Image (tube, rainbow, N blue to C red; front, side, top):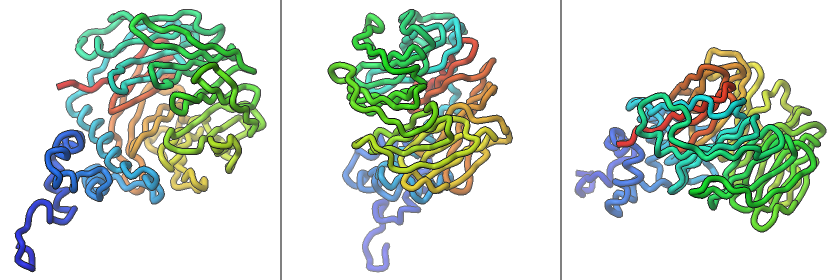
Length: 398
């Protein structure tokens, strides 16, 4: 009973006690099932409620940077779901598959697409080939895979090395390459069909998309080209914000800002509404690897550390050595509360939580040779090797 004589129920308990009661139930079940049973359960487990912040602190030992999740009211619920999904996969054992010699050359770009009914992986290599593989055939296969189940290949997709593949929504993919060409692909049951092409101004190094309508490509000629993908690949804008080749782009689709880094050691923040520079920061000894999530930007360094910045003002939140290795950071991917990265000449993909105080190693995946490109979504990871092999680390389906 409460001091005023009313009955104490689950719904009147302090949020810390509610968290303790629910701590043994996976976040995925709380969000997908229990939250939807009654309006009172919704009042506790609504992603916007304080419960998820307390759960992350007590269960996942996650205390985000002060500025983090300020724009995204679902940030804590997403972090709990993502972190606990990885932990659950590690406990159950990841369903690991390897496709040997998926390409006959190094794979510089890999993209995992598992939105809605899509369950695909796209790879682009220095052999100028794009390969599309459905993952459903790999989830229940127990042996080493040698191009089996069958995959869709498009040879000579570019006239040079393929540097980046991105997903543009609505069953459309985008590829850019050293031939200075951008290609929009339709993904269907027959494979990949090129539907739009544009030969640009110089070799393309990186590409990001902002939903179904816009693609941004960084060029060797120091520019960023903005393309409209809806009808034709019309050039909307060209930005010359840097003095040397732009090697990396990063963008949060829910933000109005994008970020670029180049060989001039300048990190630039630009406004996607006006395509103008907002702010800049000089970063010495950067490894040309970065990622952004919400209001946190992670930047890899050649000394093996990762710098975390507040995207609003480029104030440094932290400089962290996630592990004992001091090899340069090569690839970075971020999501709510956790980060995946690889190192130059390294053969392992590491996954950690990030934020204030304690950081936890969630998972580690190995390869035989150097890892060249990575991607992940919903607790699943894919990565490629310099040998042309591809690795899938998939959830164990119940």
